[in-house]
Length: 280
Image (cartoon, rainbow, N blue to C red; front, side):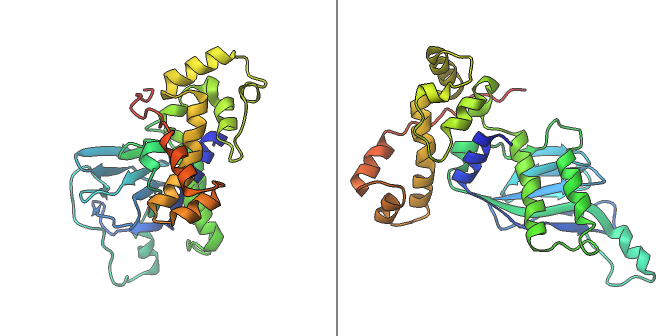
């Protein structure tokens, strides 16, 4: 994952809940998940699944994953048509019969911070890319799940594997402001938490003139590099204020001398253009 994308995710905030494998004795089933976060994530090792969000239906190939925004009509199914919920027998005549209920489909929760739409501009359903092909990171994560104490997830391993699946989807769906690869090194530096880079610092080792940097940055994000840097540094401040933290405490935490100076700084913030089309 690029440093700029990692910095955006950290600034926005991401919490990933553990996954649970869907078990069903029936081949056809539909699950209406209630993950409790802002999103649900789903990953499948052996079979394709269909993910629905309102009127949007997306096919996720085996070895792929999806991050789905919470919606009352959100569902995950083994078939594009709707069926009954996954069910298993209360007991089995032979122990090996229980293994046939394992679907290899894992579902969990994820919560992105209040400024996620502005910073990441995710679609309602984001999937690993390219579509129709397995993702090496997702496959490795799900295979590793099966080796953890007979399939049970534990502690740090559980958190790391779930987060790997979600960040893989985020990596494959970068926000429009990161679409110009020629700006990658510049944005990696611009979004460093310390900030404060001059134009010369941003262009160190980059074959681009200051004027070209300004032009490409504006064409890609609708912002100048200076505006983009101020916007990035505002994410943590505005997230804290949105959560209800006391303004005086937020101002002190982020190095402002007064709440008035913090408000003046926020008034100068110009958000990037999230309506720039994603490349197809």
